[in-house]
Length: 107
Length: 128
Image 1 (tube, rainbow over the protein chains, first blue to last red):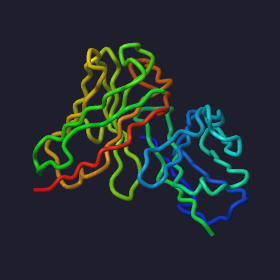
Image 2: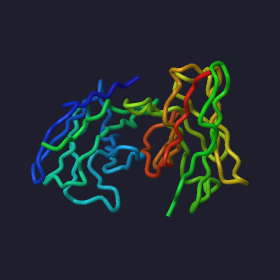
Image 3: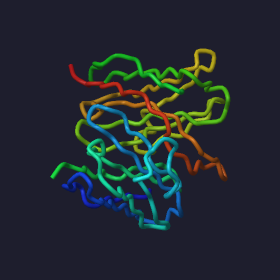
Image 4: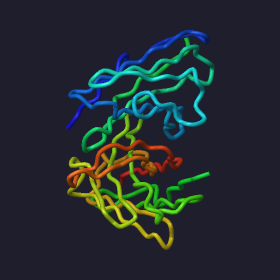
């Protein structure tokens, strides 16, 4: 099975900051990667699919990049509603698997 | 707007079977355009994919749970269901149903796909 490792596990940032989260796959997954945002008590919400395609309705301050084993999610200017936990998910091979999550906290 | 809604008991005794149903609103499971998944989240932890089903009844399960999991579909009721047997306290979690977009079956193995709609989640506690 492919293992997904996210870093950091948590990050403290201020409104307006640029935030970058990294996801590494244990083997190459091409561009079969999605990013999700989860707020406390809520279901995850997809932000990015295909490593860099923005899901409809998601603000353009979110962007994704990478291919192969290394991927990043960037929030260009952190907004108050962006404080949440973010997960990556690989879809290249069975079974689909999620990273351990990155919590974005208020500094 | 597609909505998914989980339903079922919130408390299950050890060794018994956990059963949940996910009803889909605003879209038809029978359209064949998507796969339909169960995902769980242990309290304060990350996400674990359990398995998915196609409208035809084809299923794939996470190997870590395969021996205890059954997912079924009823297109006439537009819902799909999860059964997890022989539960222990380690199965206490929030169980989500979700729609998978973009799954392809290549050489009898599913690839691709991301979860674009989710239910609100159902907390299931395993306790006597």
